[in-house]
Length: 112
Image 1 (cartoon, rainbow, N blue to C red):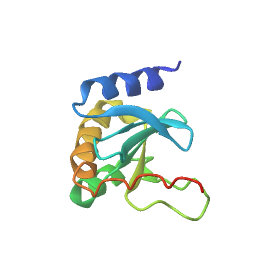
Image 2: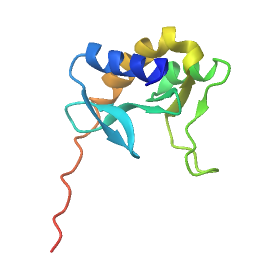
Image 3: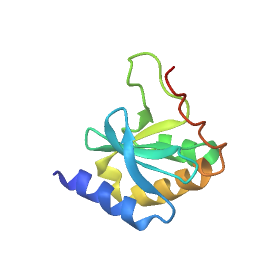
Image 4: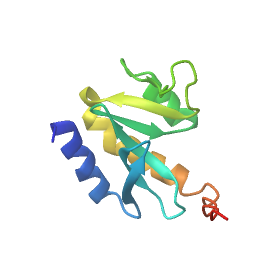
């Protein structure tokens, strides 16, 4: 386990009302409504942010929109390198507050 991954686990345990989970096969944490607020990707944190907090994160060198499919960035998902680990928890808390206010995730449909 890398230092970055260990720190992601630590943050997951410290933020109230989140549960560990998976997103795209990667570690993430989810809010009570079932939505992911952050995930761990290639020793970086990927966080769902909006508004001024998103703009602040994007102002940091090396941060960018999450683009897992090359050319189709995911709206409001920001990649923050481990060099900013001192800001990860702050941004993760902001993401959690934002995401837990979103409508609950619809239950998966059962196969017929």
